[in-house]
Image 1 (tube, one colour):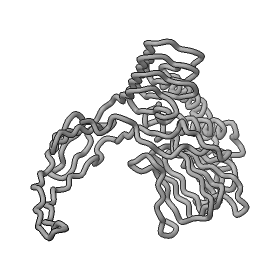
Image 2: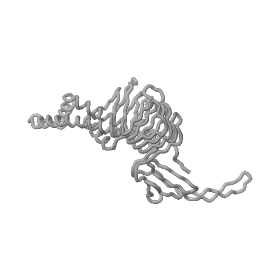
Image 3: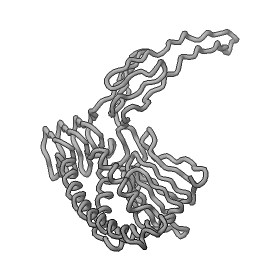
Length: 353
């Protein structure tokens, strides 16, 4: 018996204007490589009971569970199962025997509609029904649809196969290659700017007055050259960071890692962020987010990222990939991340770390 046939339900996505998007009401569980995905608990014998007539009833004998490690997983000792690759956990149970696999393909038995929610998966997706109006299907690899697509959006990293008809829809195949090409072009422009910055810094650091400055003062000089004196480069870097954050599910981790390095070097966050939007790769730390007056402020980060606020005010929203959460009262210190169930989690922080 399959235990992982369907995507899991999640809270509908709340938009910036306060409305709710019920199309974003599900997610497909996935795990990375080398992480624990199951823990085995030994069977515990039951205790005898008493009927209403005072008669003793003995519990039925218990059977310990027998785990069979399938594709992409292995046993770690006798109590834990870990992943050997990234993929979707799939569990089959027959009696007390359980087989666990990691699959690179997700199969959806019915239509993609409001009931199922939009489909996003880091692998192949096979839709056995239709893709209905205003719905989305996105896969890092291939997409196969057995029936029709109507007024919907389908995006794949490689190829798309539709066996039925396509009506007024947007189909984008090889999207990851297009994004990588765009990122490469932007990065080439950034490199040209950085070469000019390097020459300027080399000239300045050879000046006797500059060599006498303290480290913090030298950093201010770097900020001056890369910021006010080189606005086009900063604009290019912002575009690069924002694009990698929005398209992280379609590109390799190396791009996100590079984006994070650029972010840390050029956009170290101030202690206070009030209003506007902040995009980052995998980590954001802010002393105070938003304002007492409820100024709308948004933080956008990858689904695998982490956000830390020492203090956060109402009307501050955070978005991890496709999941979003809004604060309605003052909180902090607080840490936010996406849990194993695909929902945004909060954990308390102890002081300023």
